[in-house]
Image 1 (cartoon, rainbow, N blue to C red):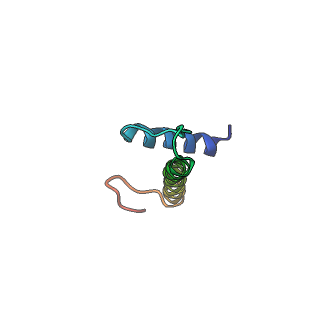
Image 2 (cartoon, one colour):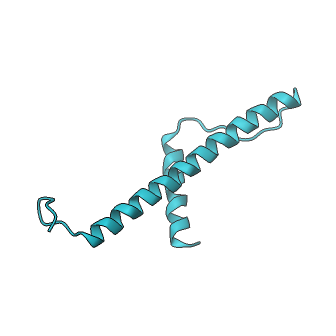
Image 3 (cartoon, rainbow, N blue to C red):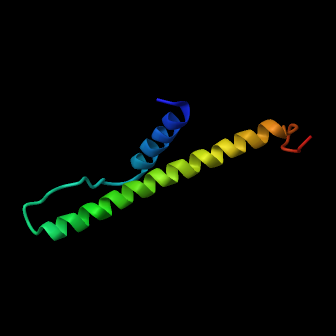
Length: 79
């Protein structure tokens, strides 16, 4: 697994750990329309977690790149 993908994977795991109870996809024996709608919501929730992890990774990468280009002196002042 690539380094970036591994970081995103770890961020998704961390975000999932902060969630309470997690819903899983299911095919309940009842109304197919109802469980399809429920599964759609579950998938959208996980997609939002992945997008959040990708965004966090990009922000972290941007911050690290910015600090590498503009090192700070002790106390946070830019040199």
